[in-house]
Image 1: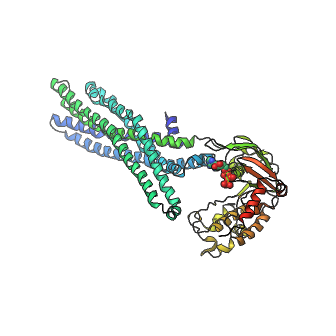
Image 2: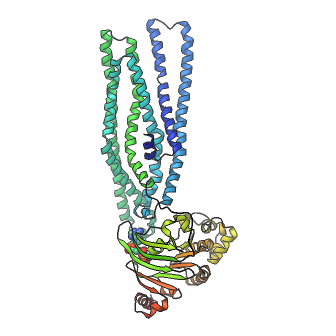
Image 3: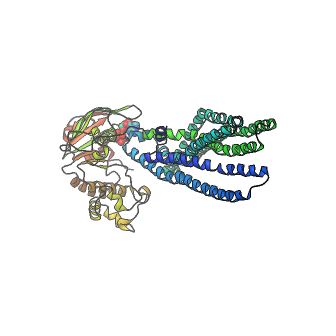
Length: 576
Ligand SMILES: Nc1ncnc2c1ncn2[C@@H]1O[C@H](COP(=O)(O)OP(=O)(O)OP(=O)(O)O)[C@@H](O)[C@H]1O
């Protein structure tokens, strides 16, 4: 059972031990809370006989002090075992999740949106945190302590005990029966909530376009619908939950009634004493208290099933693994009969074969959607291909651990990801152990100096969230500086100079020429002007290699490259 709990609630070994300690703490705390009832029983028995003997007074005073001290100690123990260890465990769980996300193939992120993942990392983790720190320990603790109390009550009077316990299984069965209904309701609520978060995120990301196309009203209308759906579904979920829990709690209260009825009958017949009757009423009232909370906890645990499933979906997802040892001889990248499809199953590459040689620049060109980006990213194992092999220096990339493989690559994407940190640190991402001087040297090569000098704090200027305070060209220069700093043997460039102005473009192209010497370079190019001097061109169309060869070879044949060249020459004459 412990193993099941550990897996279901994504607990570490220490977390599981802490949970067992929490069961124990809650059980002891519940049992200790019964001690005042025992004292009251003894006191009442003396009072019924006339008065409390003088010599017993000191016993009662000491006993009350001890009981109060025990209550304080066990409450503190329970608090320590539940709250404090929870936060440590929660950190462990979130780190495990982040670690897992590092190893999951990128295809997973294509089918999951960011709002959904953020929700799992933050909200699902928080719910599991409460479940493992409170709901489960309180439920199990209450069940153990109640069982112990019930067993001891049987020794006093089995008929009165039965009158008290018959309601318990019924109350729990009612809540357990809600499982399938509540499961569906919570799953739907969760879907509505994520759709709403998604809508908010999308709105924030596309605010500029929404405003420029006058679409804010229709966007707000759509968002309002999503918010309303969350609102109404939350009410339905709360109401249904309350219906099951409240009915179960009401049934539990019947127990007090049956104890009173059965007790009165036995008292009239003279089969139990007034004191036993009185004690049973006291014990039963006290015993039901943790059970009332347990019924709520059980309902909450049932509703957390959805969150557990979402967490499990990530944690049990297959990882991209491989060797940490690089065995390549040289850096030629060979694509050998590659076939690939994204998650939707539609084949986007078929039978792609070509070699990007070390010391050469290979340009991927072709119509939009032809598969250029996909091919370049498969080389760095962003995804695993369905058929064929990709090798780097003879080493199969699908057998190498992704992060180890990426140490061989400098990648300059069209979309640059920047962090809310200083310019210096954003460039240092290229190589974490680079000195400030090395960072500045790389930045100079990428012509970052000119805009950094204009910034108020120079190299220590913050660049805002995702570089919001930088222009498109400045962002791309930072990305190129990272590549200079990393100085990896393979370079993948995705229209790296697309958002640079003419002056900067020619300056950077000059630096790039230095950077790529003796390296394996794959460039995704849209402008034919930039590919004229490359060593090899691979034309990709509809996921297949349509042509390949040197620019001169391809110019000679009447193919796609030649056509693209002519079209671009035509379009260069176009004026506003
Ligand atoms: N994450 C994805 N999930 C599903 N399909 C995708 C994904 N990314 C790309 N595709 C599809 O794969 C095909 C190839 O896309 P790819 O981006 O590789 O082409 P491309 O030649 O680089 O295009 P472009 O020149 O427009 O950037 C296209 O049909 C595209 O719709």
